[in-house]
Image (cartoon, rainbow, N blue to C red; front, side):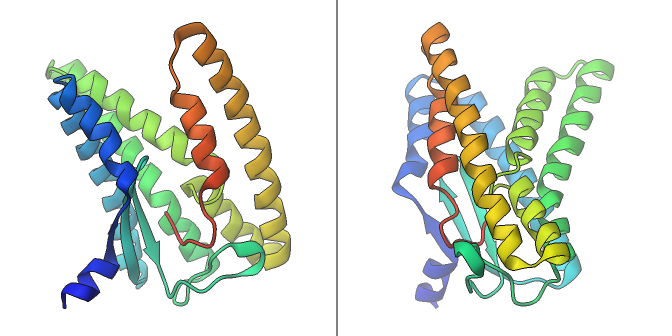
Length: 209
């Protein structure tokens, strides 16, 4: 039983970096907002997966938040994983459900800030918008990349989809790295550099959303 739970729930050592930094600086409210935003995002994936009859193979907590794996974990062409019980279009819908949940959360939070003047509502709205925008980048295994891969696989086949996704990963990661270098030079903020490193190294044979 415990072994099955351990395989389902995976925690990367890097997961502790952001909570540790925020806790050390006393930013508990920001930490709570990030955790809540990520939870809403992942709930969108889980809800759509359950609606479509998909199965969850693991939940992994890493440096950029949570990742959900689904299906059997088998690998398709180019090292990109495929599911065993969802159609390609169903998998694309499951991938896009996370950003959709984040966008809905952002709208609700913005309305709460405007109509009810809830403290921190605009910050939470912006946090959800940023989460949705990052995950919609057309880079596997982010949600946008997974959705693109599934649509391309549905139309052109696995090999073509994998080739396009590999090329896009390099191009988008390079653009983010250049932007990160400029941001680091101007503001000493390494966020985009870290994001570029994640984009280049992520998704090697995993099934993430």
